Amino acid sequence: MSNVAIIPARGGSKRIPRKNLKPFDGVPMIVRSIRTALDSGLFEQVVVSTDDAEIAELARAHGAHVPFMRPAQLADDFTGTAQVIVHALQQLPHFDYACCVYATAPLLQARFLRQGFELLAQHPDKSFAFSVTDFGFPVQRALTLDGQGALMALYPEFRDTRSQDLPPAFQDAGQFYWGRSQAWLRGEILYSPASLPVILPRHLVQDIDTAEDWKRAEYLYAALKAGGELQ
Image (cartoon, rainbow, N blue to C red; front, side, top):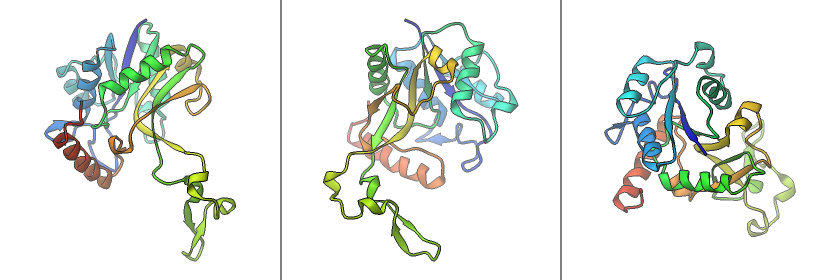
């Protein structure tokens, strides 16, 4: 079996400008993902898909391949991750498995990448395995605001249900997505019964889209580093 890691990293991030290149604890963010993918020992190639020459140069300097530049029409604010992976696979030689690794995942650990690959390989009837984490409180008891700014139950039918009687719900952890290459190329849906969960502890998960997310990730990283929990 052959595996490729594909790291999407466009140059035009808006909410955190140049996010993929921004230093996180002294190391450019994308370099952390490249290193973790390489250190896992799982991949014949670690490929960065980017439209940005500076990102491409940095990726190559740290051991990643950049065999093509991503076209502009796949580097805007509306292009989905799956489209980027499909484009990359169409440019590359055949690999049995392709793992999308996000460039902005400083809490990513190689042990979970290995867990995801082993899980998918053990289930030939499944197409994907990706990182998730559970919500800290039942989503069925969520609140929202009405038109006047007052609180109301998002799901009124569960308003009086005890939290311990509600099934757990999970969210995408935004770290990695293992998939069979043919499943990616066929356009199969990630959020479906064809996918398996790699369940991460909540304290090892922080998606980074805003400045607040970045700050929280720095706090988490410092605490995990001090506690020896980063592997």
